[in-house]
Figure 1 (cartoon, rainbow, N blue to C red):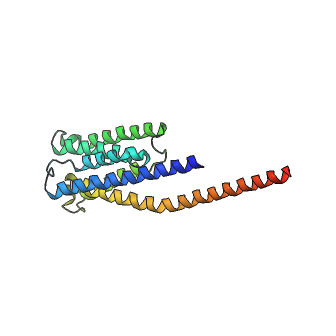
Figure 2 (cartoon, rainbow, N blue to C red; figure 1 turned 45 degrees about the vertical axis):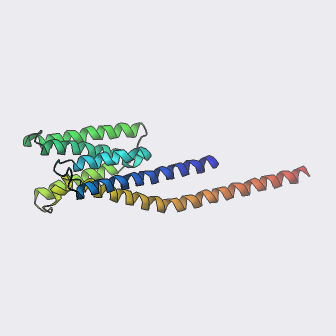
Figure 3 (tube, one colour; figure 1 turned 90 degrees about the vertical axis):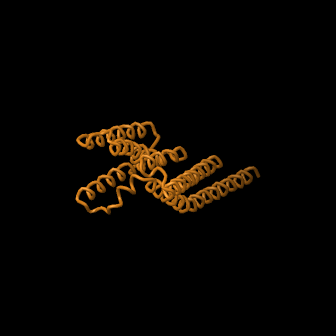
Length: 203
């Protein structure tokens, strides 16, 4: 029981550290974006993915797959806007990036680094697809592309993810503590009953 409690405490501490890293990275990127630094280098999506990868070691099941996926899309986006990828090959480059990352996610799931039923990569892919579609039919705000390419995207995105992690960990920690307390009380009750029964038989 003590081992179970220590494992839960360690995992809970790692989740908090992950949230703090996300908040710190988000604050740093927001500050740099406000100062106008590196906003013209088309690295917003790439840094968003790298930021999630930087926080993933504390809880790989939460952001490792999404970080890998977003990083690969960020590399393609950077090369595209720096004109290293011809316009006729943009779709091919995106499909290759998604395919390679999905293969990597499948490998990580098979080796237990992430859950087999992780929904985060699918949510990100659907989000990117919907955004691309809305942009193609001119229903997205004109400031969306500059926002996504600048440091405002990783700054605001990582900061929001950090706040969400804190909220989730705060909500799940109380029921988990109650469950551990109930199990401890049950074990103590069973132990005292066993001692009482032994004493009675000994008499």
